[in-house]
Length: 247
Ligand SMILES: Nc1ncnc2c1ncn2[C@@H]1O[C@H](COP(=O)(O)OP(=O)(O)OP(=O)(O)O)[C@@H](O)[C@H]1O
Ligand SMILES: [Mg+2]
Image (cartoon, rainbow, N blue to C red; front, side, top):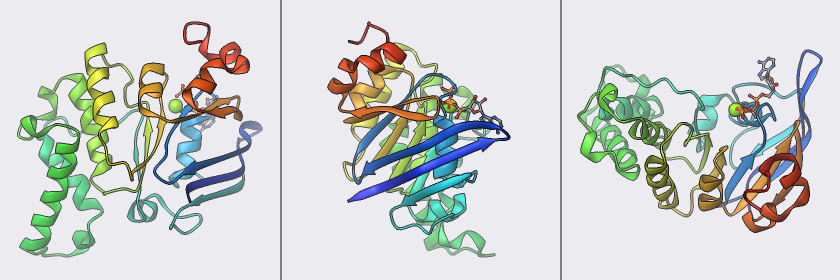
């Protein structure tokens, strides 16, 4: 069963065709990496899958969600995303950041007077997401006091607040130190197996440690899809992207 199907997707910005007849399938429970050089179209693809932008043509089918849904509708159907550049609330606590994210998608979000029960439910969700990314020790710290690595963990935790079935992560490890990256890898590996993950990252240690299938994009097209071992050996991929260090 597939969690995500992208069929013959095209995206043009004016006369610039960023995605060209791109097709991609992500299995339910799969841990699927999307790699490719700067400008290959990875973030653009995420924007289309999550409803932030519209395709020029082609189809995107996310399991259980209506076609052409808005980001908030997709979120309610189990699609979450972490951003390449996120805006955390630096002057409030970690738990408050998580609580706001959990509240945004809770059924009581529009109620004028939310009940104590729903408030508890929101807090429980926020805390669970925070624990999954090992932030429980810093729940009451302000975000500005966190290390860079903890901020990246918080960005993933915020996406987890909606209890997603599919989690798309855009460069979660960007800018991390080797120690922070190792921590992030082990946390991503420990997320529930039934959670489908689509991960964009330039760091091959992260990609190969976390994902069991890798799609390589180049100039808006799929260059190759395969297991990490297949991808490392693919001459086209080595030539276009990996260089010889990973072969
Ligand atoms: N709104 C836009 N208008 C015009 N061009 C855009 C727009 N968004 C993206 N592009 C262009 O589309 C191409 C793909 O961009 P995208 O951000 O998807 O690449 P990426 O694979 O995520 O790259 P990176 O690895 O650097 O994050 C780039 O050439 C970019 O300049
Ligand atoms: Mg990008």
